Length: 297
Image (cartoon, rainbow, N blue to C red; front, side):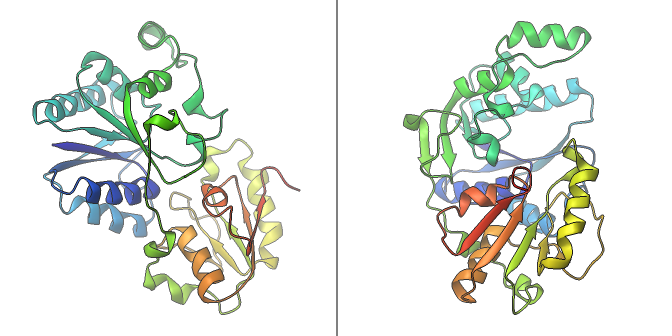
């Protein structure tokens, strides 16, 4: 029995694809949240429910829960996957409770898959070779169990990595990479088409501002650009902080919408973003000009 651990919309979309590849395998879905079960946009939950529909059962893991509880949950899943001849599919390789559970039970087969830019930006948390910074007994355990960090340990445990970023270096070497046959156009949700203005030339992609150190500065930057844009695509986990008809939440990933605009509507577009995965996914599209607001002025 396979175990799929999901945290974001991108992860859920990739898991959908992997489930088709693993067509005859029963699976358990693990939905992870930071603070509570309703922190993502409603549109994302419909995708989670879709993936959950064919699972044997599903469980939730909250980061704010007692760490011992989460370690125990993951440990039970390791044992379940092992005794049923399954695999555990994980994207977030910096998960401390998962890493601890994997260290306690080293017999499970771990498969990883993409989690966005952290997979191929060399200075990201997934490439750090230092132990997790924790206080007290947790810090001591972290340094002893993972002297070079939990991420490096889980990279070493990965049997195979599924990627949608063909041609980019990833958390494992090429021999352990499996390139998914990925088409963003197939992921377009027709419900979103009515939210796209007929003349859309300039787009701004939102982000999870509360995760950024210069949140207020960057939000002010958005407000300055806002009059010149035609569409603001909010991030699935972005808190509602701006009320405007241009600001929309979508069922489709942003890549699918951008491809629709340039391929079907025949427009060339400018896209502002905050180091978004989208800029890498569609980097080869000459009809899209990407401008990273975290870098470019």
